[in-house]
Image (cartoon, rainbow, N blue to C red; front, side):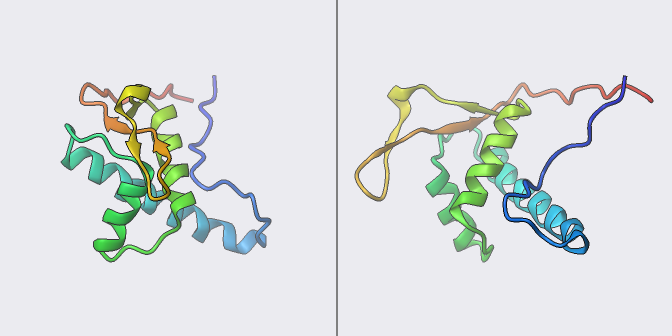
Length: 114
């Protein structure tokens, strides 16, 4: 059984082959930044916009869509929990935004040996 490599960079805009490793590394760093915020504040329920604003204040430049990708990937990995609709918060444009929180009981999955 082969374990599939972690997909961090989603090639939605075709890049030249030589630029893909750098894009993957950038996406991996972004994911680590997002996870770091959730890890430091495990009791806070964050919207993607809140995470985005926090990263900007830290001097990290990235798109809100990149934050959303990171949150989606971290949720699929079991590192974050998507909160109930009742825990939504009002966003920048008056619409409710879902929130996420850090999964404190996360255990790293065992990767099968090749």
